[in-house]
Image 1 (cartoon, protein in one colour):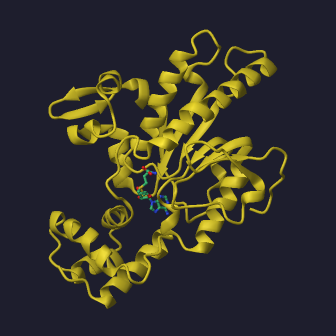
Image 2 (spheres, protein in one colour):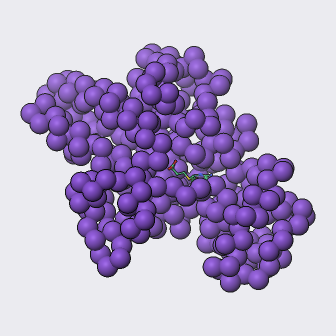
Length: 294
Ligand SMILES: C[S@@+](CC[C@H](N)C(=O)[O-])C[C@H]1O[C@@H](n2cnc3c(N)ncnc32)[C@H](O)[C@@H]1O
């Protein structure tokens, strides 16, 4: 299906208004490639119809699917392994120290929890991946006073379609086989017909919520770790700055911000040190660098 320049601009303006996602000029052909399969599955016969439902009938569900088609490359579990290795090898041991210190200070067996936010969680691969690594880490720390219950994971996305799939925790064999080895698959999923269902060991650790990063979100509170991968590059400079502003405000002292290679922290580097490991884009909030410009 051919997408004209005028149709492209109408779709682009609408998506920008709703999500802050800015489809660059020159990406018309890419948008067409990503949207054509959606038109086919949704039985929409041309782009005029799509625009009519999107813009004039304000079909929120369809809009969700368009945003997902535009921003989501095929994602799978542990895509970008070096980042997850850094989380496992550097971030989790530091979080364990924080847990132990919070428990010592509070003189309780359960200290204040470690809060982790997966801010563009999409269909759940990222937050469930985090939950698997936490499970494995806690097992390896037996006797060190770190428990699975010491961690909370919030998974959010703008797309209700993606979130519904994440909440269900239901994946095709292909999705599970790509990125997850046999042991992890057996440990964290159970087969259900031709699907694989996330087990409660990972599902119970994650809360899901719809959050639009292009609107204010500091009400979500403070976090020890924020993952924000593969979405910032779709925002324009103002939106990206506003998102990073709010993350910097929300991160606890020495908290971790985990980005991807397409996104840097330009303009915010004074507040972070780069965790040099595997070339991954993991940053640690400097202690006592007051930040109150939100
Ligand atoms: C490529 S996926 C990222 C998945 C995951 N973070 C990863 O890297 O594996 C991009 C996600 O960003 C979401 N998204 C787009 N605009 C958003 C916005 N304004 N606020 C929150 N999420 C948004 C899309 O719905 C999509 O699920």
